[in-house]
Length: 315
Image 1 (spheres, one colour):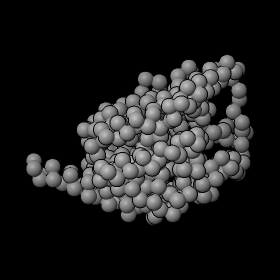
Image 2 (cartoon, rainbow, N blue to C red):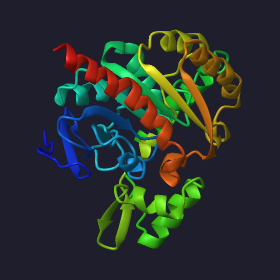
Image 3 (tube, rainbow, N blue to C red):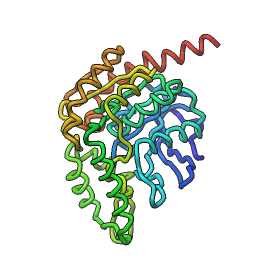
């Protein structure tokens, strides 16, 4: 495991954690003894998605942002293995174990928030504050549509395995920028450059995208609304949900998911968690981090950092 030591405030270091199929890599901001905050990016992005936001957050924290398996600089899963929220959740436990994290906060964007939500439900004693960036933390599937989604997810992967290995398309850097912006219209051009720092590999004739093509397939593990609400109820951490006005609801791949959002949000409010809506789109945390930084700072200072101080005084 490679981790920085004696790191001055504001400096950024690389992180490398061995896993059974290779390594999970990422970036670290903040002092060695800072309150740990684990940051999880969204689908097809990488840990660079937090480059703009973290410098605006409390300097007392130590921010650990990882490239999820198959993304950024992290290893791809072995052939025949499905990418899923459950698999990513297990990776969070691997990272926490390798870094000896017993209690920490989590910030997740989009898919990363779904992973964080599940982790906080399964390991509530480990998470003290939870921030969902343009996500509801859980994304239920209509039980009547479940079989269609699961069948599609299974068949996409099996069909992919039958194909002979295809060479990845080679782009110039300028073409790669255009390709990323076309696929992610909510990104600013500056944000695209940030994500491409960890999304591209240089080859002889240009650049190829580094992420595993299998991450594009539907998530094989799905949950009903009832199951999602049960998991919500098991979270002990303080939760902040930040939604963008032009954000996640416009990106639902399954129209039925829209009908669950009000129930999910009301359940958070009923448990005294905070839900806010801000101007911006799905990547507001990267494009315009100053819009959401005060909200994230507040929960980290009032929950994670204040709890740390109380514990220190008791020792």
